[in-house]
Length: 513
Image (cartoon, rainbow, N blue to C red; front, side, top):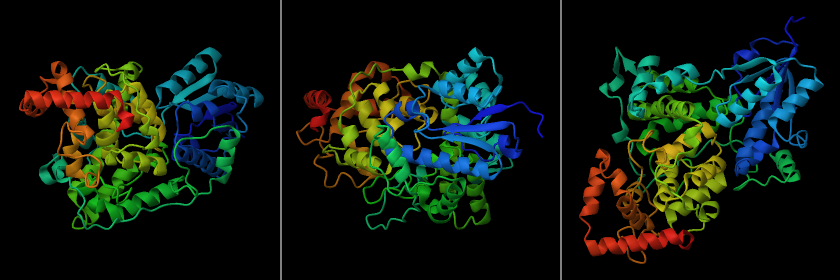
């Protein structure tokens, strides 16, 4: 018999970490709660595959805990239909099961963290929050780093992380005598190229779809029947090992490539598994580095370093930004953008081939890789002057891996420059020339990537030069943008006027393009 007090432990849908210390001991006085909640399913326009994946993963995780001997309450939308909030549900479960202590893993999302902190304060229950035990840096370490009065840049943070965790280091120096191989990781796909193929799963979503329909939760995008994403730790680890064996050698070289010839390319597609905590970032990094150590002649150091940078560097970096800057970060709008998000972001119905493909791919797979997000849909939204709230809402909803702590800094900071340069040193804007250089989209597009202001000129071109012109006072002194403004100043006055007029027409009626 346990001498512990009757305790409820809450597990959120993005806290599916089977290695958490909570689960090391089976305690008959501890009840675990996982629940599908209407407010969580509706607070953003979630892709239907995102809903399917989280609900199925929660179901599998609950079953795994029960199999290990734990007491689990797993509630579906049918069970929580009358619960107006997470707090109401917790009250009901605490009272119904006569529990006196409440514990939860600290949510990564500020909104949920605030709700649970308020609940515990007002109820006066014993217990409180514990770490999710997921990230490389503890919350205290992350807050300490980002609280320092200095300019934060990802490259500095990344080097700090490499040293701290001794990853790809050799006697205090980076392996290969370079910290960053990004220059080698910017190749477009060859004209004659065979897609490597993606490892896909086949999960029955019939019951989940029926449940969503019963409760009027439509979801955005196309449902996957069966669902092809991993929903268990075993599948997630299998997907990671398949990536290492087949795709990692070419990952770095083509990680920025844009194409409509394949949707997965050489990307790992592990972000849902990582962000739901099915997969440990440390385990993934260890396996990738091990592949290089075991067979350096079969792996590219540029690919290894590029992948480690995404997980150890960027992922931990944006978490630190989010932790240290919320809640104010959610309202930043440094460029005072106010335009509405065009309707084609929801339909894909636009003549811009690169944009249409990125959105249609997202509708079909709940996925687009980082350059599609940053330099196609994100770039266009910034050039159009869309309000960052609307961009946030779209990104948070449409991608299977989108959870606010990782989505918001990527959107509001990296993509939209709404934080005034706290996260990124310059706005990530480009003309159509960047897309032409990295893709095969421009061939066959309705627009001419070589024109700035004609009726058939690529909208990215007109909007790019107009963006630089519009924000010269704010951005003209940015050292990283000196060449951009030098190029702007070379455009003849009449041609610039025509370009600005063309950009204004596009901004006034973007759905016409």
